[in-house]
Every structure is written in C-alpha cells, then in structure tokens.
Length: 316
Image 1 (cartoon, rainbow, N blue to C red):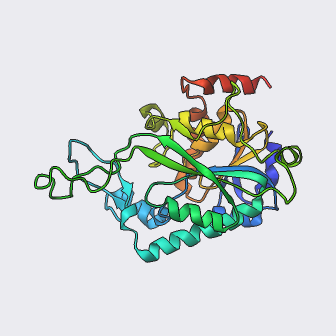
Image 2 (cartoon, helix red, strand yellow):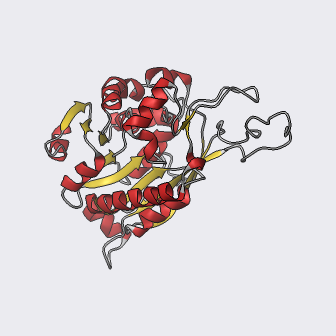
C-alpha cells in the first residue's frame, strides 16, 4: 500500500512502516513541495510554544538545565515532569507563535483536499492564538474536541511560598485538553454529498455502532505501558488518538498526515486502524525513535471499541 504514498516523499529521506511512511524533513519545507489537494486529513499535536522544540531547548531539557522547559521541584506531594513554560511567553513570542501557525495553515490549506479536516491539539493558554491563526489562513472553524483528562498542569500553590499561601493556586488544575477542528471549505455550490463523492472528504466518520462522532472524549493520561515504549515528552494515548484518527476519514479511506510526528503516535493509531498515513519529523532523535516504536504502539490493546475497529478494518 505504501506505493500510493511514495509520490509524497518528494526527494526526502523516508522509511516505509506498514501502511505508512515517515519522512525526515521540516514540515514547512515538505508541505511547500506537495501538489495541491493531495491529502485527506491532518491529525497533529504541534509544538505549542514553537520554541520548546528548538534544538537548543531540547538539549537543555535533556541536560536538566531548564530553559523554556519548566523543571519544577517536587511539592504538593507531586513530582512534576518537564513542561513547556507556556505562561512565560512574551508578547513577541506570542506574535511569533501566531505567525508560525498562520504560515503553517497556509501551506496545509494548499495540500489538503477541499473538505479535508485538521485535528490539532492545543492548550487553554494558547488555543485562541493557534485557532485564530488557522482560521485566518482560510479554514473554517468547526468546533473544539474536548479531551477530558486530569493532568498535573496548574493547581499549584505559589512557587517558593507554598506554606505561606496554602489556600491559593496560581491557575486552575487542568481537567481537559482542547483540540481544534477545522475544515478546508467545500468548493462553491458543492454539497457535502458531492464533496464526499469527488474528494472523499467533507464530513467525519461515525462510530462503528452508527452513532455520531462526539466532541467530548473521556480519556486517561498516557499509560505507562505506552510511555515505556516511547519516551517522547508529549506522547498522547492510543485510546484517544485512534478515536480521532478513525473519525478523520469519513469514508474510511484516504491519507492522514501528521506534520509534527514526534515519535509517531498518530501514525501508530493509523496503523492500528489500517489507514494510510504519513508522518513528518525534523528532529533526528524522534525520527529514529518513531522507526522503532510505531508498530509497537499500533499493537497496544486499548480495551475499547478500537480493538474491534482494528479487526474490522483488517477484514475489509
């Protein structure tokens, strides 16, 4: 099946994995090389603050030197993992963030088929910037998918004054993660049924039982079994990704792209569902990690409907 995808390598270093290919390149450069209207959907968890995945910042995180990665002490009885310092972004950095996603949106608009959807992870601090920049690039805002999950973000007492202000928290404890849903507009005068027929896009795939895809998804934090497979700091659980990846292709066929692939969890979800997919990653460390972990993550049993979907799609 990857023969269908080889034209999307556009001279880049790549590796075939199952029904998918992963590409070593900066996604901006890769998207510029693509022909118009070639891909069906984008599902991605991008670098929210942009600079936290700069090479220098990743090195600081690895060495425990902080930088933009917040390396907090253990307090409130919890040990925090390194997190991007979203709230520390300056006005200049926020403008950079806006322009980053505006440019990315313009390139994605060209590459997606009419009616193609973007599912993009964000956070409560920066979603308004990310989402508005994507709308400015030409996409329709179709709503927010709420991943209900309790994290260790927020809820902290004032740093270095925890005992003095025991009844104060600096921010609410995070209990959800917003994913923006966007659609490239249908051609003028075209109905959804026409778009589905011509481009295989425009809508969202219903669940296997026939009920609609829903915009609130209860979910757990990424299980340790998956974290033991992949050591990426922003790893999303397969139980969640398989739901949105499944919904992204309304007819169950087409090509899904994750332009900020990381260690390949979105590609693994596509593999589990027997979908064609392309992952793009510029960092060598994560590209090499993806080659090793995608098929392992794809075989994870999420103990829900997705296991039935895997068996169902393999029989098609």
